[in-house]
Length: 185
Image (cartoon, rainbow, N blue to C red; front, side, top):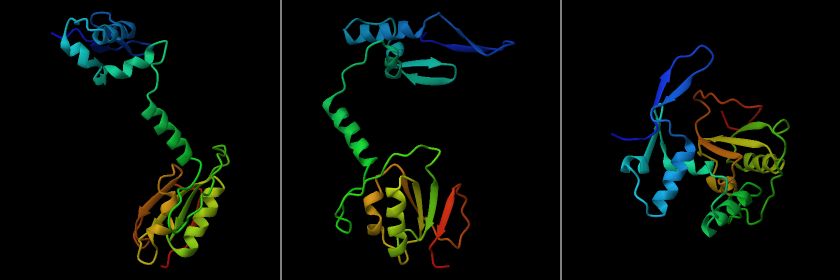
């Protein structure tokens, strides 16, 4: 049998608690992982690969965050994080838009979620540029009949931008603060 943490949920009057079968806590799990990494065999290989809490299986590597010290970040992870920060602060230069457009980080209370129908067209793409440079979250809805993806390609990797290929003659449910309807029908 596996000696992993088993959560047998029992009802209580105040809150739900977990009855841990063999009273292992997260500190024991971290200790087991450190022992595995140093070459010491654990009691059971199932413990090394999987820990089950309640009905959710959790990879033991996610328990590492409970350590008091952080492991050094690799060079590749550091570059990845830097690239994500750069992509979140500017557009990517493309052949149609060869310059970089900066996007400020504004507070959530001021940032609006804006829907631009026909946003891949000439006028719509310029409105999208303006809204993105103001720091808003922009959703472009276009069927690409007359619009072109290259007009908005420089925003495709930005976290505040999303493109939905959809015909405005068909219903769609999107929760937004503002709508700019630039599509034909």
